Image (cartoon, rainbow, N blue to C red):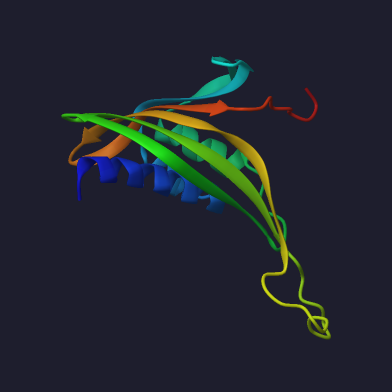
Length: 162
């Protein structure tokens, strides 16, 4: 597999771990000294940091495990990424990709079964976040690891109680 494809696969594993709320797997994608920072858009081409950065795979694991809300019954999230731009220079790589996060809510199957005329998937999918991932990676012992990960949000973020 090419280096470019391996780098893309790190992002694919990252978004799947996020959707599953799997902090251990997600944290394992980062170096011990990695820096993760969320940014919010303040203008057409400008962003400002939001909150404190996470440090290292352990910080990422802790944040996912303790701060991300569990999905409700019948609920999940689904990240999609696209337009990956990958540059590899030896043991260093840069990845930039667009993302959209979808909220998925399955309808509960009625006890008496689906009503006549029902067909297809039952529930709703709603886009809730979008932006870019801007990520630096380094090959460590033959494996690509994230060393800097910027989440560039298209929208502001509200935190309850603040």
